[in-house]
Image 1 (cartoon, rainbow, N blue to C red):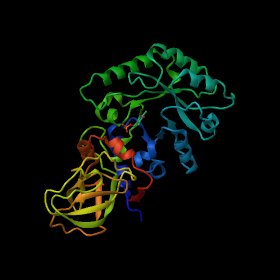
Image 2 (image 1 turned 120 degrees about the horizontal axis):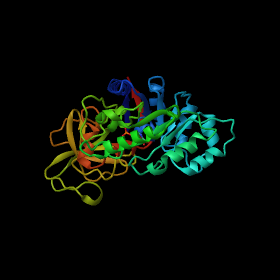
Image 3 (image 1 turned 90 degrees about the vertical axis):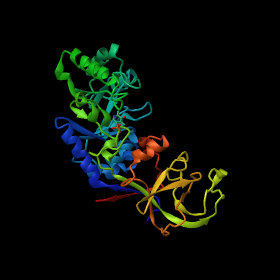
Image 4 (image 1 turned 135 degrees about the vertical axis):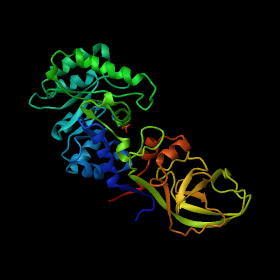
Length: 361
Ligand SMILES: *Cc1c(COP(=O)(O)O)cnc(C)c1O
């Protein structure tokens, strides 16, 4: 039994998929499982959802191949496309779909033997300005892709919002309009396949962004793409460890590296087997709460590689081996994100392989 444990409630993930199915009943759903399914274990999540979603979205070819090696037959999409040193035969042989965002990629497609076929997503830069064809030459590049013999027709369209979590920003409506203008500019509509622009934030907050396909990531795991927890979602992850020592501590004594905290009273400190070696960030400030026996207890001193220290209080009844929850049921990761200034996306995806994943329900 691992000490640092990522407990994943499968039924919560299924609940969150249902939430998106009801929210966007006419859209297909690509479940984003990049970064090891936001640390929930991509193979475990993919096995759970294999026949419940229309595809899985990934950021690296190696991630997609791991899913194929695990016998996952669901469509797989490389959201950032293939990379300069990626072997296109792997995409073809494993039937992996890819975004196409630049001319160099089209050149490589044209070099593939013509007997092969690849399903692609034409990536349009509607305003994120990170990847994708620019609007002014999008139509010409779309035509180039149409003329690529190895590209399966029709061609899917993908774009990405920069500010979907900012509910009063005009940017999302602008990006949607640019996408619609591009679609309207293609004369032969039979060349256009699926269309997707919404990740979780877009799908939830911007109904017009629910095109043929939505691509939620973080919210599938029950975490809000906005600042506060959403009651409609169920948090899948409980990240926890246990108390490994309980020590008397005197007023005026410090604890840990750099002596950054000094106790204002005589108390009892708990030592917890958790540190930045498990992915609990060293930047977590003291006073960040953890949950022990149902109550919030503050971290004191600096997070070290393998341990943190908490102030249990002078009258604590806690025992060695008691669970310590860093986030999950009873302590939303959104609250830790707001407290620490480290986004929930980063808190989740920083977790290391020393923290072991354990599925329940
Ligand atoms: C990560 C990602 C998503 C999912 O984003 P969430 O905010 O986690 O829902 C969707 N699409 C693309 C292109 C992404 O990179």
